[in-house]
Length: 261
Image 1 (cartoon, rainbow, N blue to C red):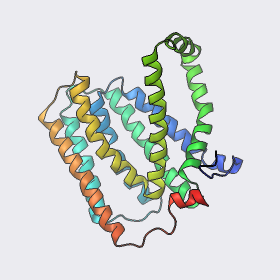
Image 2 (image 1 turned 180 degrees about the vertical axis):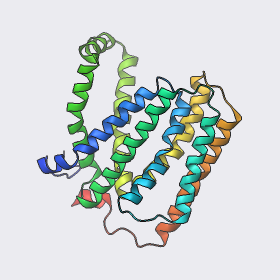
Image 3 (image 1 turned 90 degrees about the horizontal axis):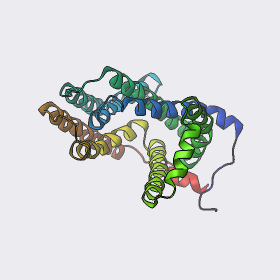
Image 4 (image 1 turned 90 degrees about the vertical axis):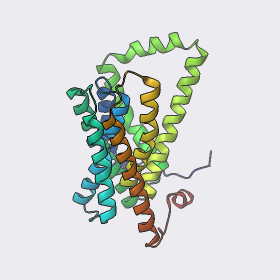
């Protein structure tokens, strides 16, 4: 429609981004598997270990050593997760292992997205397009291997007469698209670490609503303490990055400008 300018499908670019899609889908698969044994608030708390994993991955991939304040704030965020986990009376080894594996895959694809935007000059729209396109074979294999297809198709047809179901389905799709776009955009314009820290702050609301609305979760003082420490770490990181950005020259070209090229 001409609202965005993006390059056409390129085989070489697709080859470079194949691992982004692989790690992205593995993250989703393990995250969903973990929810069988971990409640929503604790799942979100475990996923908050991602900033620490991204920080470590960045160090080993040649990004250099982060500032002391950034390092300490990320460690504080991770410490909050551990404290919150100690107050989880419904501890499930399988659920926790699946969630931790999901953290690993999320770290890998965010680091690769950041690198793709910086080295290959890809915009968030282009990365999202390639990710969606390359995800189709993986997802097709999964739904056939797990037996979801054709059972899911018959279930979808049966539910298609329900207006409320269609509205919720449409909203879920739109929110998924907006989430992926903004996540890739944030990762390219800022960094993979910033994206995960923003996710930590977002998770505060998700955790709170999870305790209140979903029920079935035993609230312990350690859960609340861990959540507070975790949030403090996220705010500290935002403060440290803000002052770090002020002391540096702005980027020569933003992701928005890349769209207009």
